Length: 471
Ligand code: FAD
Image (cartoon, rainbow, N blue to C red; front, side):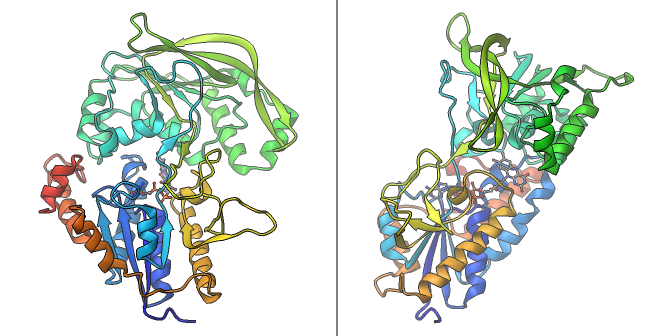
């Protein structure tokens, strides 16, 4: 059954999940009209504000997203915050279908004493800070009086953060890193970064490519305790099941081997891997105004029957690690929206193939919210690379098409889509940024960047962005 009078679809979020879903929907029929709502004036989600500035090639996907946005069937509404400027209920009354793809914009917490001390940030905040995300541009990151940073976690985000802190600052000057971060890194006295993991080198959660790049940084000594590299038969079993873990472990073993010393110009930095340790508390400085360290507890691994994997168990043996900056890289978490079924433990919207489940959830007779779907990190949780969201989007669009065919929802005349949305936003005095407006912002960012030899200088403040867009 073809969509009768054009299906009005609204996508919330303009990251990879939003764009891939839009693309698949637009390709599915000429009669689909898609509006994409984004809380920031700039699109592209974590491709702009997550992917590291020194990974320019990863951001090339923005060209593909820009092409998708050029479709006459797609309307972009930047600077519209769903849950603040407009409610989910309002969107559902305006559109036949609403796809929520608003990512994971909060953090798992460790739930240990001292977590709110100044100088303890999540890796998300730190990444947003160096990437010029408006929410974290003024994060009080002071690197000029620090000699060490502790990163809790050893996944790819932790690796990114460590690399940005250790990389020679001149390598970053020609990237799109925010100017305030470049300035802070230029003045940085950080010479040591600790990467702390609860488990061992056989379980480390990063990928080989990211790790290899970090281990190969010029002027950085890598230290790993040899005894941590001794593996058990259980570790061997786990690594047999995962080529990635095996490659990562082999890289760590290679990095731990003593090297012939290479004379270096300038000061040396150190990257130290600390395995089998979990944080138990953050220590306050004498005046109580900041973090002075983190207390770590030694762990041992124990087989967990449920997951079939080894889990870290505390031994009660603790030690303190001094530092003035701790970055917690222990996982992102999505935020709920009013009126949306939300699993706060998993930090996702309960769904089957992207169809949002109605509460209370029944395993035997699941009921779905008609016309409401989720995609990307909000659907699956905060894992997977940009491309993973393509697979996710395909699944969601298949679900939408099947549900339409089976009559789970219909294209209702009261769903006025784009026209109704514009009316409502205008009534509320919300200055939304169209894709053409974004292109004006984009042009100014590129122009400003070119003056400094950077691909762009991101416009961080909303008034500046709106001014650039002549709004
Ligand atoms: P997001 O990309 O987060 O997009 C969500 C969008 O929704 C955002 O634009 C946000 O502003 C918007 N939004 C949020 N709330 C609202 C609201 N209430 N109303 C309106 N809009 C809203 N993958 C790679 O392949 N390569 C990499 O190098 C890489 N590096 C990464 C580095 C970091 C630090 C992180 C965190 C991830 C990285 N990833 C990388 C993974 C990749 O970025 C994600 O897989 C992908 O961005 C998830 O897509 P998404 O659309 O679900 O969420």
